[in-house]
Image (cartoon, rainbow over all chains, first blue to last red; front, top):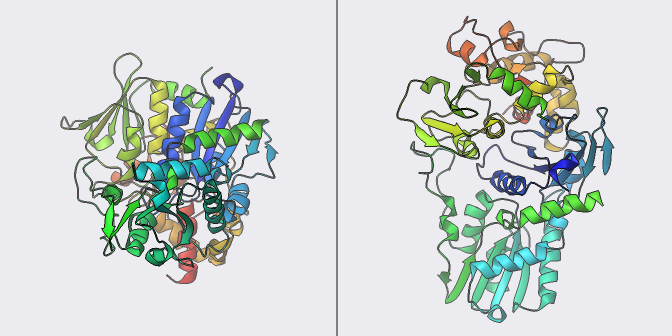
Length: 280
Length: 220
């Protein structure tokens, strides 16, 4: 594709009315893809932020844009990718032709891409540089008990794929709210080194506070980030500090804690590939 | 070929113009400078030069609170964003007020489809399905409070309450539904007649209002 193709990319994600960091990775991936000038236009839309999914119907000028590739920035297929996004965008299948002539192509979510496994491995290596993988346990953390989402299944699938590579001593899918519990990481793992990667699209309360508390690397929930001291932009204290104190020494073990996988810049490549797959 | 949005921006830029709470002024040939409209005479503004900086500027209000609704009248003060060209201007404005330019361009072209609130509510599933049970009188009160320009939202409401064309709220001034009015000015000085150059149009209830409808039904 090139800008002369009159094609646009729309990245759709959940967003949040509470978590300021929820949409940040999606916006960053969009900016990166925009910089590469692969599509004539690149936009984002969110279920809980602006622009809304309903707004997105109007985002692309039908005089200039003939095809719109919709890529869900979701970790798995589920309620949002199968029900909410198609309904809100007025999509009636993989390919929808609008009355204005625009063709909208609905692509696979990023979490379904086989290269997700490589990204997880890469993130695990980056967060624990120089640590022997054969002496390390890798934990992929998902939420669990999601009523209509398959993120727990996706985490299990990724853990199985990484296990089959045979690099790490142990590879486990663990969950916040159902067994195997992340809380039980000491019992579930036998190695001295443990690497933990949250299998989420963005960082937020789960990765900043909930999982760290379950791991025992954060004592208690910090005051809400919704109100920050007044000051100049960029002066806010960072919740990302939790990722900068690696390794954590607990019970003679070394624990390395990574940011959510969705913040990896490699997601931009996967988003592009999902769009290209729908084009071919 | 410029998009319809760029054509509209080009026309609007014949003079400095307001877009919500933002003042947009031309600078050197082809360049623009943006600031909070209240800050036009301030000289101690923090300077930015990348359109992507608008993401962080728009994210928090003056008190540091997260702004989930970008068209709420709580844009932070104290910044000045210098942009090189029309493309950067368009991108920055899309971060400040996401999709509002595209919706305005569609409206100007006579092709904007609005959705009655009842239709948006009936479409919901999952935890929001219950929101459709809200009564007409509850909608009247909720919209009057949640969407008011003074403290709620600066958009101009184009949608109706239902398919019969009932007004979204009888308790809002008629100017709230008129794209010719500058909602930001109207909220600061009730009765003001300053026209809007590019209004923030609302073609359909946002997710935040749907969530508020649910809260009303659930008695929260």
